[in-house]
Length: 163
Image (cartoon, rainbow, N blue to C red; front, side, top):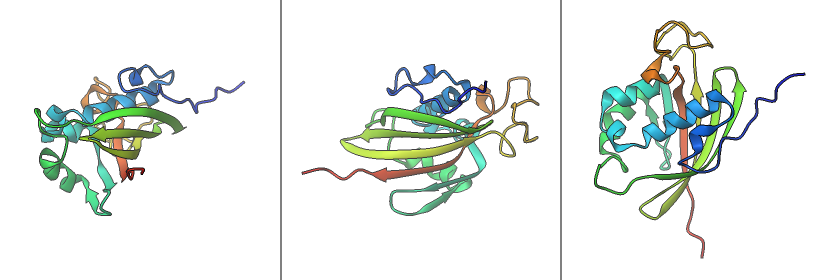
């Protein structure tokens, strides 16, 4: 009997890392770290979580690369320690293949809602550089002590206000 690896992560921010699938939980933990102003302000911490081949399609339609995102992230919304923060909720994760997780969730920041989607992968973009699906190669397991999953793709779509 094969195990169904398509398991949703818990649906609220605080408990989102308690997923039954460790790879989904790892990706959710990475998302939550990327929403933390301390990580957003630190190029080194953010670089541990973004895949070197990272691409984002922003709400404006702009395409961001790894280097562009690392340079801009400290100035982006949600980065100020004393400013409005992203409030994530409704996480759902699917393990598409070993080392490849698709997450969807919603955020609210300063009254503005967005639906978000990201792909987290282990492989050529991980800290071990070997493309190993098990994250092996580094004693700590890879990027940022998180087992090596890194965000490969992200898209955020604003949710319009309903009348």
